Length: 539
Ligand code: ADP
Ligand code: MG
Image (tube, rainbow, N blue to C red; front, side):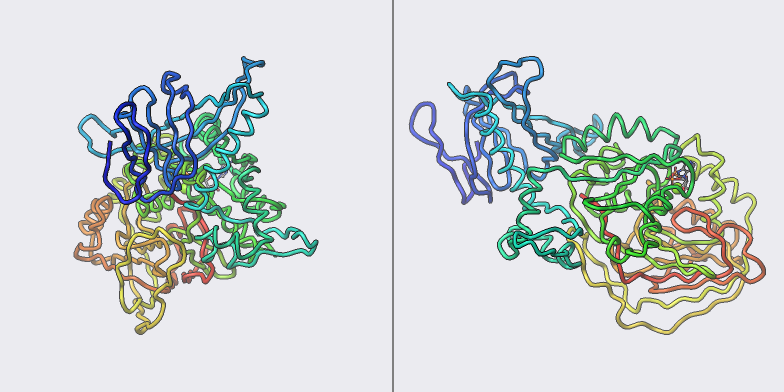
């Protein structure tokens, strides 16, 4: 047993006196003895601290298991379905600690579902009393979990106790208050109802699913792997299955979002692109734009989800099991802000959370569609074909570089300032290009690290281009180096971090103009960072 640490709790020993249990930095909240059904019904002394759940075997006090509250994704109280007369209530904690090795030789650990089920059955107490007792444990645990990971508060107007209608303001929902719900509770009593009722009531998410995404298995993925986790996390999910391309966009552009805590997509970047643009096109878009969106990686291209996993140290979990990793992020309900770009195309404006480009990479993205049944390898296969038939595109490319490219640390908290301050002069190049491609996140696919220096909201567009005279050898090296992120070092490839760029076709837009992997049509495209970022669920 660890005996070090400043914050110790004295516990009785079997034999000679007392020993201390290291609470690390946590404060003891509750302790009791329960049989644990997921540990052979042995009795355990259970300690809930402000940061951990600690199990100490009653039989052998040296046996201690520690679970971080940050690995808890749901907590329920239940009644045994088959033991109608049993007075005991069940208290379940759904933990996903990182304790399973990714491979026999691997030292990397990945998250594994570890339910802890306790029987709460106090002598002489009725089921109702035991349930009340178990519910207090649940509420107390969720309260501490929420102070570690506050959930996004609803934007909807709701009545305060005085009967007046108070609408949450932008800053209330995503600003500093989000990072400290305890402070929030004490300073704005009206909202204490919303926060404390969260522990008792369910969160409500709209889940939009593209049944054609990836290899067409999204429905069974959702039913078997996603829905159970959302349910355990206390999320009421309302499922909307798209029937055609554009359906998600038209649905979210008119749907009633009263009382909604988030929208998550099951599909690829293309589905999220529809959702983001549908939301921003609404007349009440400026308010609705704050609803957090989440991605459950069911597509063949999930650049945003992959990037978020890399920023939060979840890369190996993501690569091992993208559906589990992204579902847990959505279930946790923690929100971060990511950059969005405004893309002006001839007559209309679209919003992009990932990439925009023209030429080689864009063509591979779109044309590989016919190889969809093979999954993500379609991009590699099509790259080889496209290199054999290399094309060039005449364009005027114009950009405003960010004057200094600062290396920012991993984003764990929302809203750092973007560095759009001092800018140097606009650069314009007219000529033939093999590829022009940009991203505002690090990964554009599972193993395509397009902008290794990118962070979630650094205010920079990472632009690369290859002029026609660089030739096929350069284009080949460029594609081969994308999985290592070393493509920007290749002779003939220009990389520049910009705050804005424009692309004007000279002599016809042949090829594919692509935003977030989706084909668009225009003669001219202007891409700049949007002043309103996107709120996304992230670990
Ligand atoms: P993937 O990553 O596998 O490409 P996406 O979610 O990005 O999956 O979707 C690919 C395309 O499918 C997008 O253009 C999207 O608009 C379109 N789409 C969405 N729903 C449907 C549907 N029900 N039938 C056909 N296409 C759809
Ligand atoms: Mg796609």
